[in-house]
Image (cartoon, rainbow, N blue to C red; front, side, top):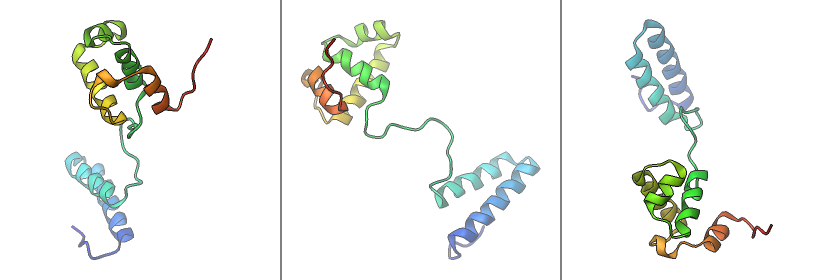
Length: 123
């Protein structure tokens, strides 16, 4: 492997060349190892999978939190959204963590509106 003392550009070129060579030889494990090293060298390198929402609520977390704010149980929320109670529990937990709340008893519609930056909706 290339010593770390060389420049980042040289290391990226070396790893990219190796990754291409390994892939061409059908050495998938070695090519994957090079891609992982490339990601460590270059955080801008595109990654597979969906992008995360960071510290903002995902659309599903928001939907679950709104129903939890109406004092519905995990089972009732799951039945409405076709989710298991365990999945609902995970979404509620993540939403509470992101909102900085200790429990779902303090979760309200007004708090969700403030946290997501939505104005009041009047019909």
